[in-house]
Image (cartoon, rainbow, N blue to C red; front, side, top):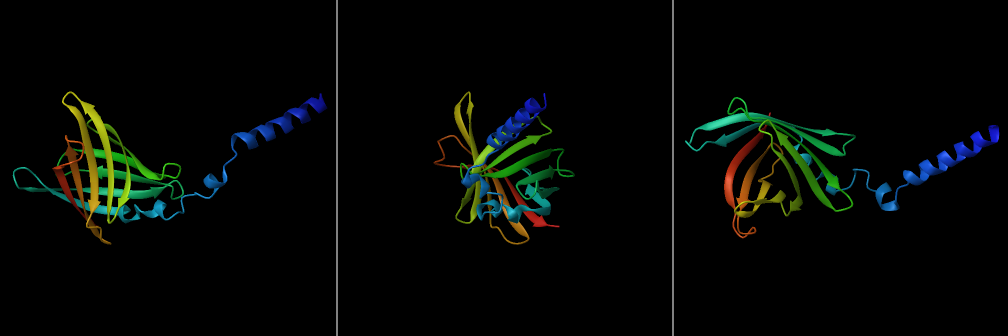
Length: 175
């Protein structure tokens, strides 16, 4: 019985080493790469402002935190008092695919997945969805990035990205 216990224990230890073994690439990608910090400009507490269709200005807040030992970014958007719209996102740099990925959910029941990364001096995350009218490309563009401010656009395209329509522009200012 004692020998069986030892054999089973050794087997479990070896099995756990096999199941949790990492490749050399995975071992070297622990959230400290240059790409892993491309979104650091977004971290902090922000006042957000946007122009409504009637030319009035609305505002809200967005709090963006580094979580999970610096391996993920958590966003907490609150459109109040400008509008009753709240949402959260989680973003992570995917080492294997060498892209940023983001999952968004909100109080209107939307669930969206985005992917992308830095393109020159802009962070661009996009997705394409099928609609009854055909494919719709959507993207978020973070640009004019400064230490305490940046601009964010929500854009869409129905022609495969040849042209983009601005749907919502938000000005971020650090609080």
